[in-house]
Length: 337
Image (cartoon, rainbow, N blue to C red; front, side, top):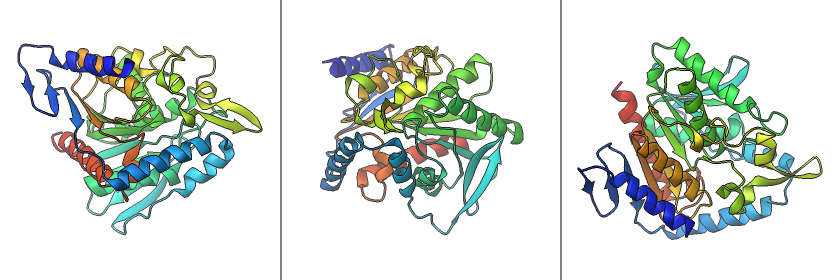
C-alpha cells in the first residue's frame, strides 16, 4: 500500500501545472521532470540474475564484514585495452582514473561506489567505472573513501567532498563534472549536493543516482523491508552497517538522509530504481520531493529489476540498456557545457 501511494504521489507531483505531455510510459511536467516506467518484461537472464542476487543477499546476512570486503574486491571485470588505468592521490585519498583513448581532460565523470558505506574500493569501482568510461568516452574518476565502522559518518562524505572540490580548483570549471553514485554512493552523492548548497558552492553539471539510499531513518525501507545487505558480523559481533555508519548523529540531517534536505536549486538528475528492489519507496519519495522543489529530475523505474542491477552489464540486456541511457544523460549534460 505504501509503495503504491508513493508511486501515485510522484505521478501527482509530476502532473502539477497547466501544460502536460504524457505518453503510455512517461509522465512529464512543465519543469521537464519525468517519471518513466519501463514496461518491457525482463528476459530470462535478468530474472535469473535477480534470483541469484536475492540468494546471495540472504547468504551474505550471516557473512562477516571482513569476508564481504574480500569478496567485493574480487568482483573486477576486465578493463578494455583502450581504457588506461592511472592511480592517484587527492588530498590524502586514493583515487583511480579510467581514461579512454582520446578523452578530453576537462569533462569528467566522478563515480562514487556503493557497498553500504562499509565495503568496496578502487578494485570494485572498476566495474561500473569501466562501464561509464566505455559508454561515455569520458575519463572516469573513482574514489576509495574511508569505510565504516572504523570510520563512521562523516568520514566518507568528507573524502568525497575533498575530491570534488579538488576537481573544481584544478580544472577550468567544475560544471564539467557529472557525479554518479550507486546505493550508498548515491546517498553520499545526494548528501554532497546538500553540503555544496549549504556552503554556496558550485554544483556539478548533473547527477546520476543508481538505487540511491535517500533515507536512513529507522522508519525507512532500509529497516522496514529487512534489507539483507545491512546485516553483517564484525569482529565476532552482529552489526547493522547503517547504524555503524550513522552512529549517534541525527538521521534527519540532510547530510545523512538527503531526503530531508532543501532540494531547491539542485542540478539536473537522472535516478534509476528497480521496480522489485527494497528501496523503491524511499527513492520515489526523493524524486517526488526534488520535482516539487523545481529540480529537473528524470526517474526511471525498471520493471522486475533489482538493487544496483546496472552492475550486471556483462550478462543482462536490460542492464546494458540502462547503462546506455545513463551514458546518454551524462553526454548531454557535459557536451552542452
